[in-house]
Image (cartoon, rainbow, N blue to C red; front, side, top):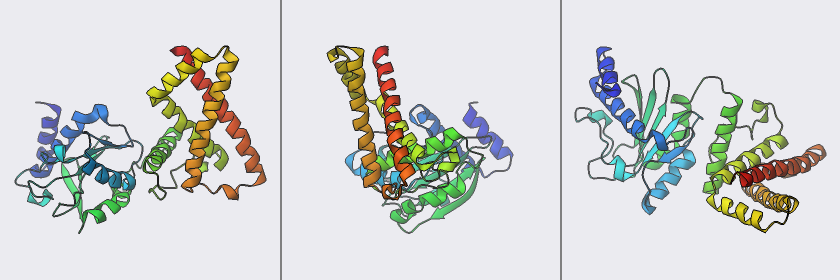
Length: 309
């Protein structure tokens, strides 16, 4: 008997409703299948999105607010259409067969895994969310329209699946960077964020101030971008080949780093994520120092990457 089947048996033995027990187990099995592709704290599509899927995904991405350890999968119709509750569980059916389904599955791993399954298709007869734990249906939320369902996602996730344990520094950084990454991707202000957990909005959560927090955001964002970019590897190699000395190479890396820093600072300014006009004289001086220090850190990262190639 596999692990999922053992869970179902245990839940039923504990007098949980067999319908909700089987449905939660089925949802867990789906998540288990995609674990290798899912990144904690981020909404990940589990199948390539078509153009019609992308607009729904962006709406959900904008509103869905995840704490850093949650696992979240976005299921477009190609996958979601085949995922249906047990025939006996009519109260869990939210969309008619044959209609394109868009589902979000969120898992909070732990001693007792908690899950939310959300149907947010515009074709759903009952768009909404169902919350499960230990094989039991804890509650459901129904909405008149899929837009209403999507707009309520921050409230649903924060109230019913957010991690309540004490956060560490890395958790605040992960949460803030995931929010900033999708804000930059969507190119719009007002993406929901719990300001009490964002180090950009509340620098004290990482024992910092707003200038240091701003440049931590810039450094973390660019460090990840540089690590993930194949184009950057080619650019680094080209710079290294052209440079006649290490000094020339480092100078070129410094220019590259400063340009990228300015690009991200422009994003922060254009989206009004920080009010630069409110900086004090001391903060303006700190801004200059942190800009230079962040550039130096990035240059060191770039050169280390180049020498590893």
